[in-house]
Length: 111
Length: 117
Image (tube, rainbow over all chains, first blue to last red; front, side):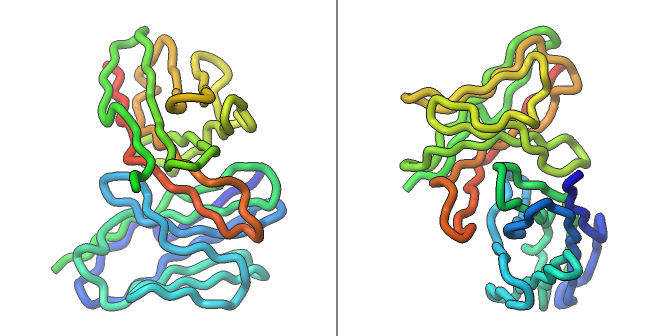
């Protein structure tokens, strides 16, 4: 059964800390992995990763994929209170149309 | 350049009533996905539709739930005879289609929060 597992389930840090969010996946005929940020609304797209070892970066956020070990990490440096959200990762297979989402990591950044 | 629109944003129904959730995709997108997010759970795929066709409904409950995406107008997710367990946030996403090399993404709407009393 295809699945995506995220850890930790929740995280509380102070502003300025660096955090690493983990996502492991088992997706048949894996094609890509996506990261989303969900606040009190719909998920917003962060990254899509298809190749192993190539870091994607956007401001203080970065992500990388390891297709051998079947996981991805999302790093956030110098966290701010605005980073507080649930971070979702999703695996997409090469065939079929489902995106398999993890349950998310709830990040709280306190001032 | 409007994104995915969903309405209503909040819907309250009594047990046994029908709920209709609407989704208007990004202009030009012909692929629509519906997801359900239960409290404390991740997004669960329900159904994937193209114009006038259901492509994959493997995530849909077998009874009471149906979806359509007509040639004209929004996609509709319909839940008949709602029960308390149907209370959830329902998200719609659209995409332009299956891109080459997996380069496309899904654009999500703001969701409809259904509460069944």
